[in-house]
Amino acid sequence: MMQPIAALGLPEPLDSGELNVMANYNCRRDLARREPSRLLQPQSVGDLMSGVLRDLGKNRRRVELQDALEAAVGSLAAPSCQVAGWRGGRLVVEVASSPLFAELRGFRAEAVRLAINTKLGRSEVATILFRMGGTANV
Image (cartoon, rainbow, N blue to C red; front, top):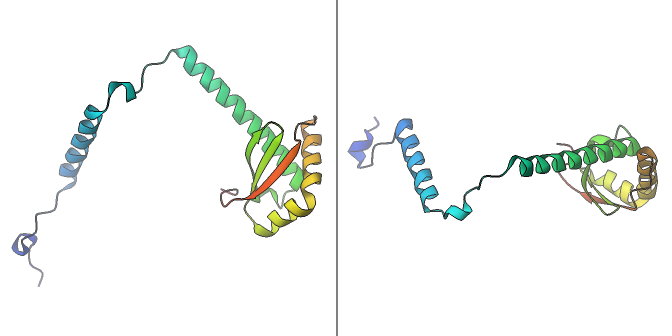
């Protein structure tokens, strides 16, 4: 037979309402301790919009590169490849499969680079770097 918690000398468990009140109190206490300079400051709409537009341009560019990569590597390999970065003519591609990584890096890097440039319609990718990554197919 199980004994009640109080008989064992243990404190009674808190119910969910008490836990929520405690969590709320701790959040408020932590916010009160922060310096005002660390809290988010208001921003003008113009500053916010320029950031949003800049991010949209980056996303559009990434989608364009991803589409070109998928066309270059083919439909079977495309789910395992993802554009991880792009800067100054260097394209970084994460590959989720070790055998595919070895094939792309060792034998098909130049062909993939040329196919991407052909699909883009301009010679933008000067070098392509393949790296192993476990999140390419997520």
